[in-house]
Amino acid sequence: MSLLAIGWEPELRGLLTVIMGVVVLMGSIYMILATNVGSRLAFLVTLTGLAGWMTLMGLSWWIYGLGLKGPEPSWAAVPGQTIIQDVPALRSAGALESLPDGYEEADPVDLHELVAEEFLSEGYETIHPDNPAYGQAQAAASEFIEEDGALTAGQYEVTDVFDVGGERYPLIANNDSLDFFAFFHKPHYTVVEMSPLVPVRTEPGRAPAAPEVDEGAQRQYVYMVRDLGAKRQPSVVLTIGGGAIFLALCYLLHRRERILKHNLSTAVATA
Image 1 (tube, rainbow, N blue to C red):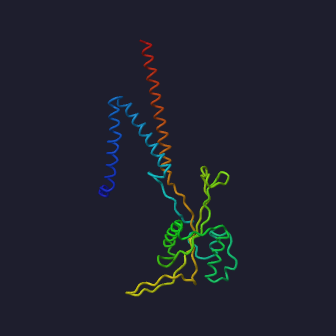
Image 2 (image 1 turned 135 degrees about the vertical axis):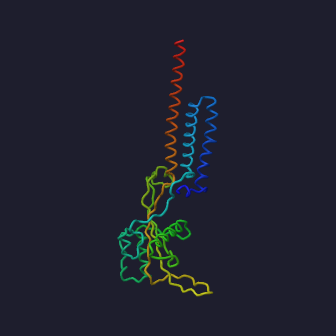
Image 3 (image 1 turned 60 degrees about the horizontal axis):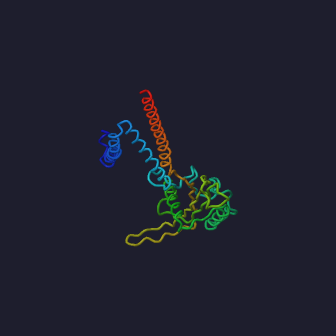
């Protein structure tokens, strides 16, 4: 019964495409070489050429980030501390080192401003809505808060995005333009502020009213860390693995050539 679950698209078609590609491309090269140098040597030469081609292809994918790619960079949840629903939890989660002064007596509007000032004083930067990073953080935060059930779609609005960290190192003479060896990164965090909206009553036949932020409601925060992904990892593995196989096969060809020359010279001397 499991065979019935296999469809023509894309399982069988993809499998047949790979088989036909191997037979037509590599098989044709092998057949041409086999008519000239013999079946065994033709197989070794064809396999060496395939490994060399895989090395070059993997190297080009590695440089340009194309072809076989791994997971893209994305915002990931901070385990157990992603959804923050009050100000004291910002410090316990590690988003803030200290709480703003006077936050306990402040009303929701002033509390929002105090928290924003504390973020800026601790090195965070606000991201402008026109920045593409704002949209990426907004989309990731919306997904996390809706999955958690704290707020649902249409009940909130993103009002601020605070960003910190992510610097690369080591830099040559602290010059950002000379970053060829800056392979390491500091942790990159972002805090997205979610503002609940005033519930809007919809009436049949009338356009819904424009959403407004509920100034009396507690702001909620989504704390995320940047996952750099592994976009070039498959191409790196392909380049290193293909290169190792290519060098090993080249050594076998070289060794075979030396043995052949030795045997031929020995036969002439004996004769």
